[in-house]
Length: 334
Image (cartoon, rainbow, N blue to C red; front, top):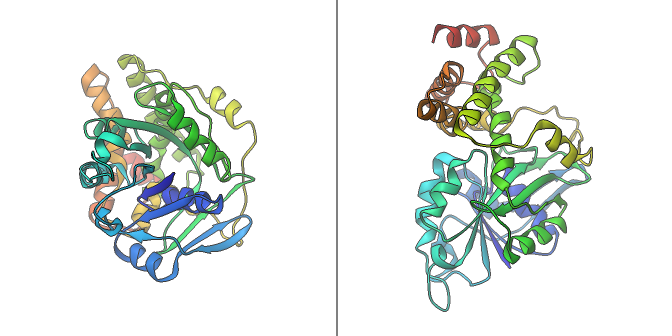
């Protein structure tokens, strides 16, 4: 199988680089300065084993792959959710050699935070798979990606969407397992993704105020988490428990310093650091807000975090530049 990584940032770049190291054919999809850097110098992937440069094919769109996709292509969608619809529209109608389109024939794996992309994808693709990404990785500079996990880079639960397993997902998982990932195949992948959604409610706090290290920041996250748990309960949505998640990882992944550098922050913090002008808060805190409005559960904390994070992104304010006390005051003011 050939893996086409649509969005070769922190997650996509690490998955693509590791798959290439595992002997698999990989194409990266990127844009802007990151595309230019990948095309000129390859993907620089830094892990606890060191830094390697992978001169992988890179394109900006399906046009770069010729008039047809291959029947053995696997599309891994790893853009931020706010960019999913545009990416899905771009790739779904692409012809596949031998007849048919990508949307009708090819597997598409949503390797993203949040739970919205699978729904968007299923409108356009017949064969959709979810991936719950636990992969601490960083992408702040064009052409460069780092992942601190050892001895494997991360844990990637995979399964069909909305549920089930098949031979395709087993093959994908086997390739990932040979490429420095834990890749459990599960019939209920969205249980894992909803659990990850709850943990990602901290992303806006981290993006705006920096790493969550103070009691005040932890207290704010606890309030956001309580709203998230209440909305899932009201909606009848099941998520894996923290104990189940801990048992799955079982101490099999540790984070190691890379070149002595301290960790900056997660995906939302990185978006602000790159000055992209967008952030995924609408599909993290905003997912809880949506569920709350649908099921009559108040979500004032997540509404405020969504609003502040979007303001930071729109105004291109510096990541981590607000004091926790100020953010808490904004939340309490409603």
